[in-house]
Structures are given as structure tokens and as C-alpha cells.
Image (cartoon, rainbow, N blue to C red; front, side):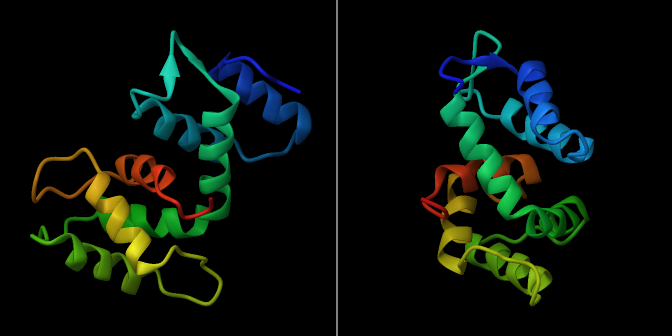
Length: 137
């Protein structure tokens, strides 16, 4: 059991020890998201609780987050209301094989993003906020 914070490269190696063919792209996106959360990294290290929480949300919602990346990474007209952006995300990501959080969870996460008022958050900002919600707790 790992009970002390580790640097990101050690977490990446730990994942590879458990599953050698785990996708590098997933690990890269996971750590890119963790790096955007200033509270997640202390002295260059990530605690097991933070790592586990991010990994859980990203693993479960990976297909959904890839589709969110398409929505947020595109150039849509900036919505002025969080509920409108949540509606755009849900409609764009609706599908039988794409598990997604509820509309309320998406609105809550969008409300917690650190981007400026009226701006569209990045998918990493959205993931940080989604991780802080109760979507899988």
C-alpha cells in the first residue's frame, strides 16, 4: 500500500507496473489535469487520496471527458449561463455507451471552474471541478 505522496513520474511507473499496456495517453491527460489543480500537488508530489480521486473520475468518465474536450476545445459561441453550457455538454455527449454525470453534477462542476465569468473552461479545469463534486462519492 502506498501511504505517502509521490512525484507524478512515480505514479506513472506504478500504473505501468500494475498494467504494462495501460494507455500512455490516459496517464498523460490524467497528470495534465492534476497539474492544473494547485491544491493537488504539494512539493511536486501527489498524495494517494488525490491521485486515486482523479484516477477514478477520469477512468470512469474517460469517454465522456473526450467528448467534453471536443465541445470545450471547439469554438462554440460562448454561452453566458452555466446551465446553457451544461445543456450543450449533455446533448453533445448523450449516448448509450458514454456514462455521464447528471445535469446537476455538470452544472455544479461548471460553477466551480476557475475560468473567468462567461469564459468557457478547458477540459482540465472541468475535470478538476468535476473531481471536487460528489459525482462518484
